[in-house]
Image (cartoon, rainbow, N blue to C red):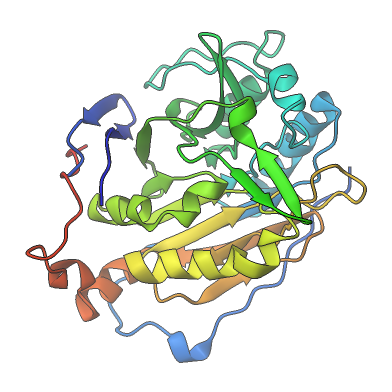
Length: 336
């Protein structure tokens, strides 16, 4: 397995690069847990309450921002310490929309300068402000980012004090052509990112991927090797690939890497040019679906016990059992 570029690791004020990294109110969604997959041992728990906000996205950017803010505020009122938004939550999912809705995103840092709401980055400004006011960690889905004449599909992660802790640019662009079903070429407008992103937050160590990134197990395995506990994938699978693969790939990544996998999709908008599958989901490190929803606008609330990651890895030590003499992940993770 090869990775040509680095793993971006951020931890509040620290930023390091391992170059050899060898408009309805959202409602709570249903939650389901299989009793046959209960915790294997009574070890100490570290529980985190997460809200996954599956938002209905329209062509009205200002309304999208208001809707996202309200969903975050409502989630915080219900005790969530980490909130997740969908892929491309501030604009329609189309190559024509990305340039029009794009914003500048600053570099991460402890005192990252975030433009005021009246500037050209209203989505970024809102996320910084609401994460600070509500005291939550925010995985801000993704928005189109403009930088040096290029466009990226970018996820911003904000800490509970409003600082931009990390940003991930989608590394695998969604270029597919299924005859009679769907053809979409993100590369017509977007540029691929060249780093993998690990962010240390108040709630734990996160790895970030965006939508199509989830199809590449090497990326998730590198995150597991870096000690990631939760991989968050804002994503907008469609009504062709969604029913076939959405849940399957989430559970596969969780089982392979023995960690939590969380996805957040836009809600499906009937009549839109791109039909999102929805079904935002949280999967546990044993591959069990912890919580999910349908295709409508909803907020999924789920409690994640991060201690399960270590317990599963102790009971079934996949990483230690890998045959480095036969195959390997290249490089090592930087110590954040």
